[in-house]
Length: 253
Length: 115
Image 1 (cartoon, rainbow over the protein chains, first blue to last red):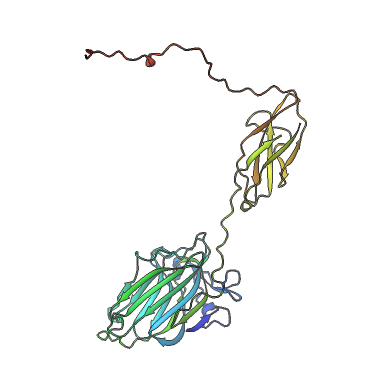
Image 2 (cartoon, rainbow over the protein chains, first blue to last red):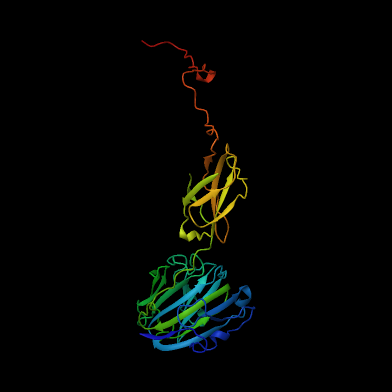
């Protein structure tokens, strides 16, 4: 069941202050009525390069506590978007304890990466679920400027069990979902570390690190697969224009 | 000279806005009057320019869109009413055998013949 499916519209998004995030660095965020999946527009977050690493911004939206969190959202990197040399953050799926799971792009690549924060802040360690292995589908489209649909699943499972699971899919140009991540975690809820009662309770969206714009639309959270909206992905933008091909078949009579 | 010029239309994805007809009196040199001629996107095109009756006229065509112009098509020509046929490249003359050059003489092999 989807807890909510946010149209990311000005005035009615469930994320407080999402359209008025810190505008440091000179590029503001706003409502994009041209690039959108549905409704009147999408959320456009502006990333003015390295400056935003120190000022950025984020906004949170909560949902009912769950051990099995599914998300579905659409995102679009503007043509030429530069992923930060460290991380360009997308979302943080947080529990009511120190456990959290970050969805990011990392090290100048537009592949989807998750980092599970497994340990208490006094011993904080991020675990890269898939770095350099399974994320074959880039969030950048070819030609650039197209939308991707992303789905994630994070199952905490019973405490001290081997039920932990992190999965992700990215929609290709034709709307087919490609599985880019499947990772099992032992003892994700861990009695020894005090996270045995953790449940996912909120989602954080970021504007931090990168250069260009990222659009988000139809951000949804639930406790079962949500799937695409009716109509699926909009088509990719047309390829850049080129001169015509050489005419053929010339005949003179 | 009057000539009927036809060619294959470019693919729709090329978004052609105009074809340009190049013409002239020597292969590869399209310096005829008004060349190149903007002929629009209608095919065929009726060429009608004053040319000497003995001339050989060479044609080529390109396509244009909002980005720029394509490369020229392969060339075709048309003879004027009193033009001589174009000169064909000389063929190899049969029947005359030239003397072998040094490299064509079989080398002499030294050594004993075997039985």
